[in-house]
Image 1 (cartoon, rainbow, N blue to C red):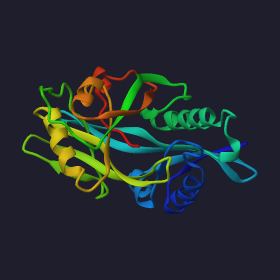
Image 2: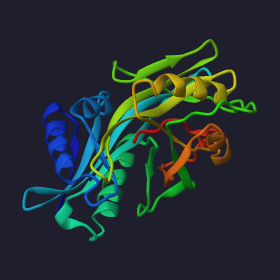
Image 3: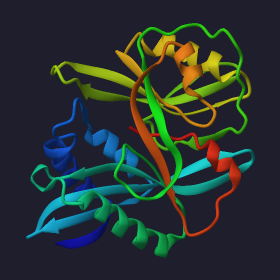
Image 4: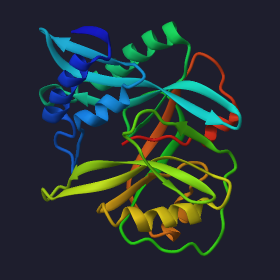
Length: 265
């Protein structure tokens, strides 16, 4: 096996797209269909594809890219992980953990920035959130109580890939993801990537849900420290899957990063 940390480029993202089309979610109960447009956005500010190859053929890839987050009056760069994929003929050999570990070590040594990422299981890192939920909704319920943001850490978007829903009190960034169910039904989901509000986040999410469902089949949002399971269920969201959220960093991170509010699916 040979490992390479490959800087993102038009050529490498095109090759990545072909690899993901063939091997991502192999054998899973649903399939995420990543578009070339999504990958171009993900790597817009530069990133890396960590790749394990066997006889010149990719067998495992791990995607990491740079993003800018805002907290109060401060902005800071972090790395956030994207698709992690193993060739369908090389499953259950520990290659996912290996490619993540090799990629992370090289990136940390060079850039000294934390690497964040959500994974279902199997990646051994410092875990911020354990067994948190991913929730979907197609029938939103109006909130019966208020809940306000403790820390508004949100994404500073780049390009025009993300959509923006705005009210007088805040906004939500989201994108549309193509999903194929286990029955082979094609759906479009609105994925909540990040939000900011000075008001009630439940009101913001409810108003967004009503609008987004006019154009997509479901909405997907990640539970975090602020958005608890009971609150999301009260808004009509149902548990879809569980995930761990991990961080790999060479230095101690400030407490407000527990309120991390940037997710990709």
